Amino acid sequence: MRYYRLKNRELNWGDYGDILLTGMTAHLDRQDGLLQLERTGPFQPNIIISGISDLIVTDSFKNKLQNSSINGLDFKQVIKRHISLVDWTNWNLQADNPQFYPNGGEPEGYILEIPHSRDLADKMENVWEVLLVRNGKVQDNSSFIIGNKPTDIMRAENRGWIIVTEIMKNWLEQNEATWLAFEELSKCTE
Image (cartoon, rainbow, N blue to C red):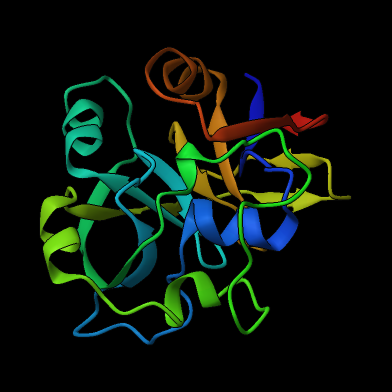
């Protein structure tokens, strides 16, 4: 079996592109055990890694996952705490720089310097955190030793990395891998 590290696709704009694509789930503490999402809208990727290593999916993509044969999936609703209107998907994604930089110069300004839009948040799909089983260990930044509870998607016990099997990688590539990247782990021992 082959295993891969699941990552976000990189945009040309460094941290500015990262924040526009992924939003933030690590900025605020959880509320009643739920992640609080802060991001730009109206665009929301169907599946993305936000914050440090929170895997989040839209409602429609959650339904696709639940109707698949992928194992190791459980979900918890995410609070759309702060959604700012920045429709960056209309910008030239091949350009060296974003169409504009936030006033304060920090990437988080795309979200925090622009007021929350309740109307926009209500129009966007609900978002879910994918709860992942911790299993296996990463060694030498390139190898993965599987633990005793293999699933098609899991979190490494010793890192925040999200690990997927070849089955999950293929499913994602067929269903929605636009904003994702996969890095094969070389020594996968079962």
